[in-house]
Length: 289
Ligand SMILES: [Zn+2]
Image 1: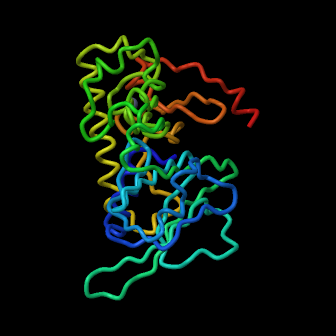
Image 2: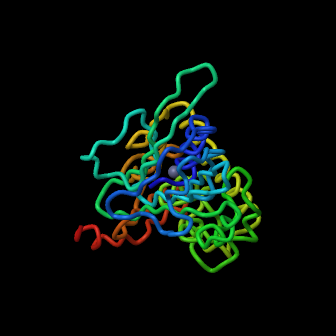
Image 3: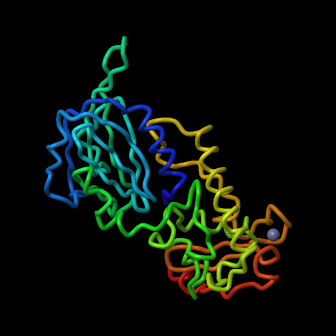
């Protein structure tokens, strides 16, 4: 679920809280989320956090000692900062980083950064890399250009015979958009989820680009207003279309429709996006759930 806006606000809040903080220890308890062995996680101890930033849907924690912690939250992860230490009964933590944050003139604060994951999938992962190897890591090297704040010219990057709903979520094509925000973006641009990227006319590609900038930018601005550390378990996503099928379209008041898949749902407005056509819905997968 965390996509570009959710990861961006996480990076911003953690960056302001942790820049300059000293790392005491880093451990990956329970089922190991750590995907690298060298350098070891213990190499972070004694180092200092230089910055926390976002790349696509990944978080990057850079240290003054030249290491980078690359984190992917996948569908159900959160990177949360607490002023208490996790007890032994906390089974949701995949990574625990204990730090001491010191603001000049104030008492040092002992904090704990936890990568927590909800649900049974346990797919979130962490890599410890030399900072200068980050861009060559598979997960980063394969990423397309960032969807926000300045996405590329879409008539170039989306020029493929694939539906917009799929191609916009392909991180190798454009980085940051997932199943939630793609519905909002396509609704904003008034484009069908099944329109092929290669069929986009130049004015449509322009409209889509503007919709990406507007939609993701609006979500980030919303989070700046409402989200605080430690980062809530459930993020208040300002969605208007995704998960709103059956409700009136905010633009034209037609009923929003949906196409159900085994593990996600496409929502759209037939009047605004598909010239009134209701797309074939694969209800069977929904009935089997
Ligand atoms: Zn509509």
